[in-house]
Image 1 (cartoon, rainbow, N blue to C red):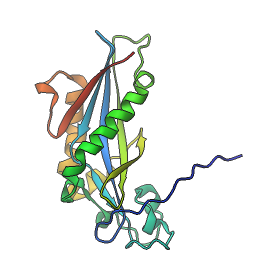
Image 2: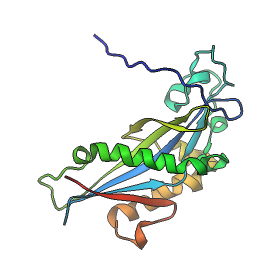
Image 3: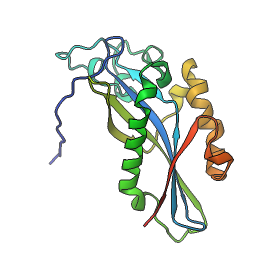
Image 4: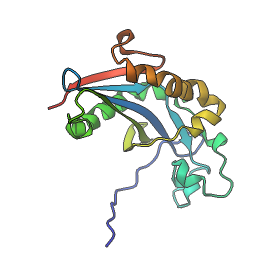
Length: 200
């Protein structure tokens, strides 16, 4: 039979009287050329997605409750340009970055040996780009939902407010980190080097 996961509904933090979520992009590199080292990078800005309707706790429709674009886009009257913008446009975003970084580090640490374990291709640099999704409770604290292994770039390319802050560093600068991880003190145009781990 099917398995289900239930959790208590949180009281959400609202922007423009709407629930919202933030997608962050995290790059994980495993340099196993010389040592079993895992490096984690974070794109400093993210994608903020609001629900398509003002929040009503009694309304269980996707436009009211779900910030995920893949769910909302199937709903009538969905307009992604109206619900998406860069995370930095929200005044409260910067002060929550330390919590977001902590969540990224802890989740990567918990699966480091499985994500990038040494193999027969030991001369290669392995990498994975994740889309980290967060919602915020009524105290303004971010709560980690999931890490997507195939984050889509279409919204960042199409929506004007996201082109420079998200699309440009993702599409144009990501290869510089991937192929030259020791560059410029490990910081390239809005990417932040968070931490290195030894893979055990």
